[in-house]
Length: 169
Image 1 (spheres, rainbow, N blue to C red):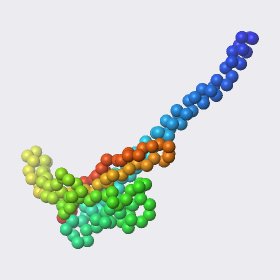
Image 2: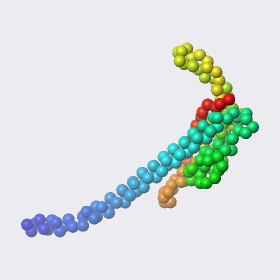
Image 3: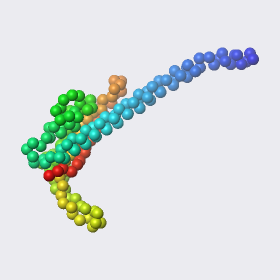
Image 4: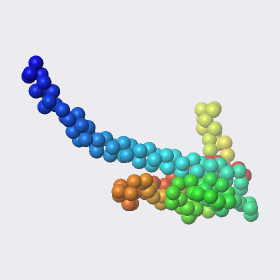
């Protein structure tokens, strides 16, 4: 009995020490998971923003004098066509939004947006189905900023986020 009491006395406080040792790595790991989730959330937000702006522009012909390129840039950056309110992601500006279409494809080098040949593969022969015009909205140079100020991720920039859709003529 005396041996059992001595053993218990030696073990007193061990759980608190073990908890203290494990607490710091567990908190850092939880914060890292939260930051990673936030980065994925921002990337998804930007993807949806390009999709919305591209869908909006796909309803117009780029030859139209009322072609709403500025409104589409506002839609991609702010979620509305008037550039009002907070940006969809911190640090996002309309200057990061590039629109490429049949009239102006300078922001998307190496891609053809005019008269892209399409094929009807329902017959199995790949017969020409005509041409279509494409429109793309791209967000370039968006830098991720973490919530925790002690995390130094300067220079962490997402790659170009782009959506391409068929444009109505």
